[in-house]
Image (cartoon, rainbow, N blue to C red; front, top):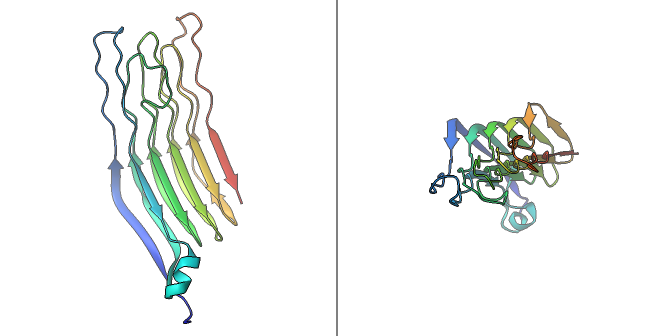
Length: 193
């Protein structure tokens, strides 16, 4: 068996990718309309164990680029998953580097029974290597007249982890003038090395 050779993957996407989903249209504030989930970016290398058999594998992965993936607005939907923000996910076997500005907000639902969309997710992880994340993330929950959307998440996992960048995963606001309305819960930040 020959020794595995290694290569690196670099994704350098200039400008900003935009993956907005459509907004729902319904008759007035009493109708019901479902907004869609924002799109996203997914980059993954194949595990070393598989490529050891054929003699080639990817050692490091690097993603650079901005992403805008907001969910589409809804009307009177009582579920955080409609109008959910999109995602950015980068998975590698060895070292992973992500440099991105990501806008993944949950959508607005201004209907009287409306629940704001959940904020999106950004993840970077490595099976054996280090993760360097230079990510500015805006993934708040969306405004919901009855209930604010839940905040999104930032997750980085690796042998060693470095993160640098502002993160907003706050819960969305609700209409304070509506009796028994409440804001969305905050999101999740996990940095594990």
